[in-house]
Image: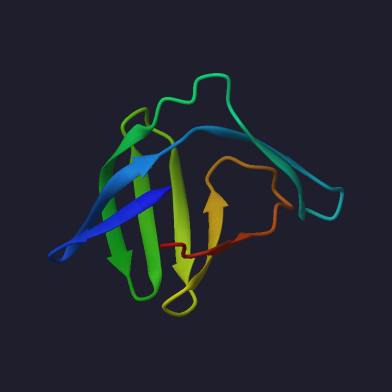
Length: 91
């Protein structure tokens, strides 16, 4: 995922991936999808520290911003017991 702050909103791209979770809902594996073409972020909405993201193909997820370098990602429509996926900002 590439997020770019553009004034009061975010733009960028997301590369599709396949994820698998353990029985307890923690991330077991994440791999790029067969189609590695980055998808444009179509819409974002920041509510407090939670960024709601909609990708051009309709995929939606939230990014809970923990601090300037850490976040947790939670896809919509994932398994009910799925825990947020930790993410770190890279330069």
